[in-house]
Length: 69
Image (cartoon, rainbow, N blue to C red; front, side, top):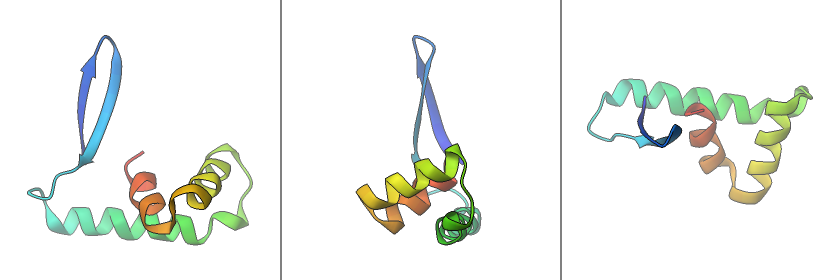
């Protein structure tokens, strides 16, 4: 799970720790890739965000950011 830090009531999610559970991190990444792969089949707010992020940043970054949301 991503680390979380809060200042002034605004939560900030950090990256997934590489020292954490490798198996859990792998599962999160694979699930994020699956969501990015099937995003065209759905039309809602979250999937539209994923489509826009994919166009801007690429599939790998989108998959990891999607699994951490």
